[in-house]
Image 1 (cartoon, helix red, strand yellow):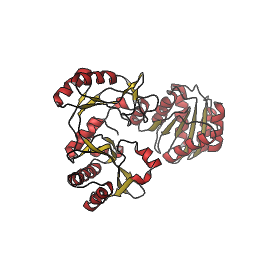
Image 2 (cartoon, helix red, strand yellow):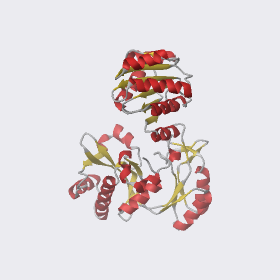
Image 3 (cartoon, one colour):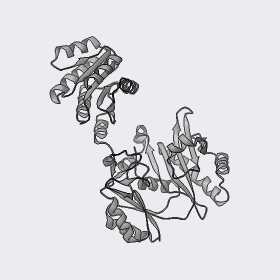
Image 4 (cartoon, helix red, strand yellow):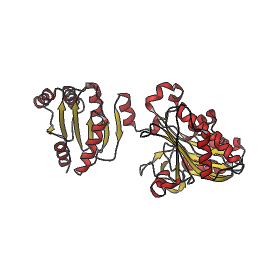
Length: 394
């Protein structure tokens, strides 16, 4: 689950991670009032969307309007808000379709001495969190990793213990941080690592992380993603979810217990198992097609879930064909066949449907489809299925 910057900074403040004062606004008038309340000579008006690169992004119908604007008066704050609210912001992470700006964050300015990068993710290979820092603050970390990976410093830490003092000292030395800034960094980094573990984060990223003229380390940005599987432990986080920032089909699928991610292609995929989903998408691309989604109905899917999956797939206007690839283990092939037949009655298939069934009750499932009036292109294996679905839309 992702949250907005202003929400992340409130959580940071509560956890002892230093941030600047800021006020969320949803109208230009509120932005003007926020500037006046902050009572500072300089403020920053930031679009709040679930995507990075806002400072370099632009409004769809106004390339001169950036997603992050420096303002020096209440009137400028109001004007900046007018240029952002209700508009579509396009960044490197949103893609060309962009995301609508429904709220902004008005934050006080500061005297920046240095800009850095800091982030924490889970290193699955090492089975522990890894803290990453870099001197390249304000730059997309993906670009740094690709062009100058030696500028990214890493420290793994035990989640039960947290980052240790000697690790912080080592990082400060490599980053040339000393004096008051080093003391501030020690408290900052310890608090951030503790927050990451305590809140079951999947990622906590600050870009840029700044050291101000007084030697204080501050989170000038905040991007947090929580592990969905751990949210049951954090009821206080549920209200932070902004469904308007999520794809409606993905939200709908989640309510039915389905794993669905929309992609840019035109061949819809319905499979059971994440590994099988990845293999199916790969082989579609190998044979010249483009997958329209990742949809995993899981091992224990029932008829209602699979029928809902078809509703979601066929509701995508880009969908030109559907490939069903089922390896029946816990999920029986007869269940999928029943769902196919039911979906045909309730939704109707107006695109080619290629089906490959294998596993538990496969012969019974194939016979059910053969005896039905559903127009199905059958396949004997995954390669055969991929070739047939690509050919069906050629």
